[in-house]
Amino acid sequence: MDHGHSGCPGSRMEDFRGKDEAGSDDAGKRASQLKQWPIQLHLISPMAPYYQKADVLLSADCVAYTAGDFHKDYLKGKSIAIGCPKLDEGQEVYSEKVTSLIDDAKINTLTVMTMQVPCCAGLVAIAQEGASKAKRKIPIKSIVLSLQGEVLSEDWVS
Amino acid sequence: MPVSTKRKIVQIDEEKCNGCGLCIPNCAEGALKIIDGKARLVSDIYCDGLGACLGHCPMDAITIIERAAEEFDEEEVKKYLSQEAGEDTMEEYLNKNIKDIINQFPEVGKILDKYGIGCTACSLGSCLFKDIIEIHNLAPDAEVELMYEIEKAIFPGKPVKKRAPKEKSVKPQGEIKYSPPIKKLVDEHVLIKRLIALIDPLCEFINKSKEVDSKLVLDCVDFIRSYADKYHHMKEEDVLFKKTGEGLDIIKVMLEDHVTGRNHIKQVVEGAEKKNKQQIIEHIQGYKELLTQHIKKEDEILYPWIDRGLSTADVGRLYEEFNQKDATLPGDFEKKYEDLVAKVEGILKKGRE
Image (cartoon, rainbow over all chains, first blue to last red; front, top):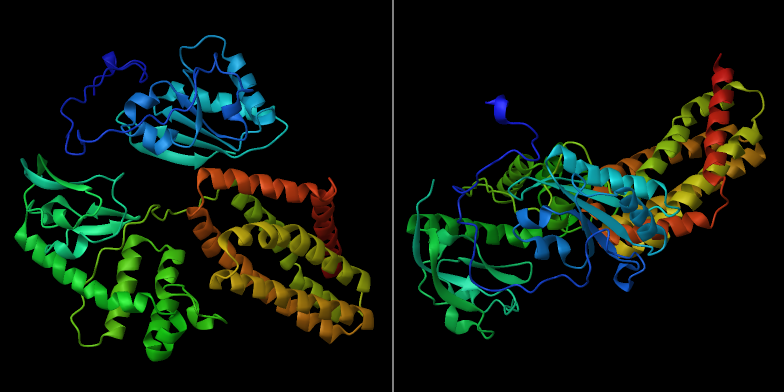
C-alpha cells in the first residue's frame, strides 16, 4: 500500500465506479421523507414543533449521499439535524443545541449517523457532550456507515 | 460470479401490493412469497418472466419489466420446490405447542436440552415450536443442526436435508447488546445477584448461631421485597410485560416466578418471627434457586428477544417510562440498597472468620 499519498482518510480519494449495479432499481419513485425545514444544525431551532418529543436523527452531511435508501431506512419517522464535525465553524453551539433538544424539546431518542472516517466520530462526541449537560437522560444510538453506504456498526452509546 | 443479463422479469410495486397472496399459487416456480406483508420475489433465478402471476393481482401491483437479472434456472427451481415441500411438513409442527411435540416425540426434548433450551423443565410449555426457535435466536449453524436433528426425530426414516435458517433481522452476536432501558434491568440484576450470592453464607451463619439473627434475615427480606420486587419487578410488571403482552407463555412463566418468589419470602418472614431455622433456610434456598434461574432466563433469552422487537422510538418511550417509575421512589433509594447489600456482606464475612 502506498502510504505516501494516503494522508487523512477523511479526504483520501477512492473510486467506486466499477461497483456492481445489480442492486440498483431505476423503476418507481419514492416520496421524500423530510418533514421540516431548515435542517442545518446552525439554522435549526430546538423549539420548532417537529422536534417536540420526536425521534431525532443527527446526521453528518455526507451520510445522505452514501446511504442509497437514506429516506426510507433512516429519515422516515424522524426529525433531522445535519452538520459536519470536520469543517463546520462554531461547533460549541452544536452541543448546546443537543442539550436543548433533550431538555426543551424533550426528544424521545437521538440517532447519530456518521461516516467511518475517524474525524466524523466528532459528531458522536458532540452529541454525548450535549447529552451529558442535559438534565433529562435519553437513549442515544450511533450508526456508522462505510464510504459505500453499508452499516458498519449500530450501537446504543448511552 | 453469476451471469447477469438483461431479460424479462416481474416487478412488484410495494406501495400497491396489499399482501393478499393471490399471485402465489399461480407461480409454478414458487418464486413469490409473502414476506413482511408484501409479495416479494424470493430470487431472480426462480422467475421465468412469463407473467402467470400478473392476471391474478387485484391491485395491479405486478408488472413485467426488462432489467439485468441472473438467468432463470430450472434445476435450481426443482431443488427449491422439493425443499419447500419438505418445509410444509415441518411447518405443521412449528405451529404446535412444544409440550405436545415432546410428549409425542420424547427425543425432541433431549435434543432441545442439548442446545440449552429448557422446554422439558418448563412448567407451562405451551409456547409454539416456531416461537421457541425465534426466542432463542441460536447462531445460524446451530439452528440448522437443531432443526435437522428434530426433523429426523419427528420423521424417522424420511430423508432429511439440512436447510438454511430463515432470514433474521438481527444475527446473533457473541456478546449480547442491550438497549438502554433493557440494560437498566440487567444492571439491576447485578445487585440482586450480589444478594443471592449471600444466601449460602447466610444459611451457614444461621445454622451456626445459637439463636436466629432475625434482624439480619429481615434486612435481606427488605432488600428482596423493596429492591428486587418493588423497584425491579414493578418496571417489568407495570411497563415492560404490558408492552409485550401478558398473555405470552414466556411472560406467564416470568410472572409465575415472581409469585412463587413472594410466597417463599412470606415463609422466610414467618420463620424469622418464630426463629425457626429450618423454615428460613428451606425457603430462602428455594428463593435462591428460583431467582438464579429466573435472572438467567431474562438476561439471556427474554430480554434479548424483547429487545430485538423494539424500534428506536419504542426504546425511547420505554426508557422514559422506566425513569418515571423510578422517580416515584426516594432519590437515595438505589444507594440505600447498595449500602444494605454491602452491610450484609460485611456481617457474613465477619461471621465466617
